[in-house]
Length: 79
Image 1 (tube, rainbow, N blue to C red):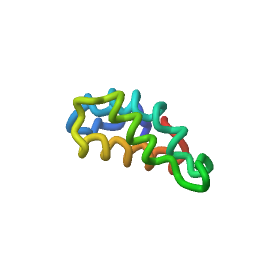
Image 2 (image 1 turned 180 degrees about the horizontal axis):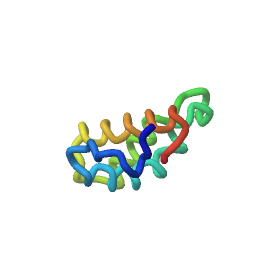
Image 3 (image 1 turned 120 degrees about the horizontal axis):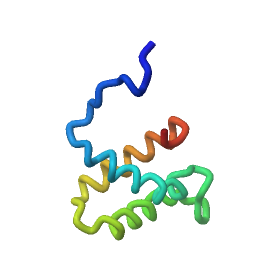
Image 4 (image 1 turned 90 degrees about the horizontal axis):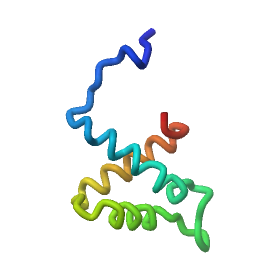
């Protein structure tokens, strides 16, 4: 069994982790499936929040961070 503190960092760009640490709390309320508006998911709002907060990010980068946040939320939250 491995300890998280002993795991080798697998990310190619450690800056992404720093960015993600800011992304996740901003989008978490919008990616919760329990949060809807007139029955519609709020994922588009999460994207808008990211685009506003990170105007220099490409659409691809924004989408990758949003997809990562959705995976983390589905797995039980940020660690």
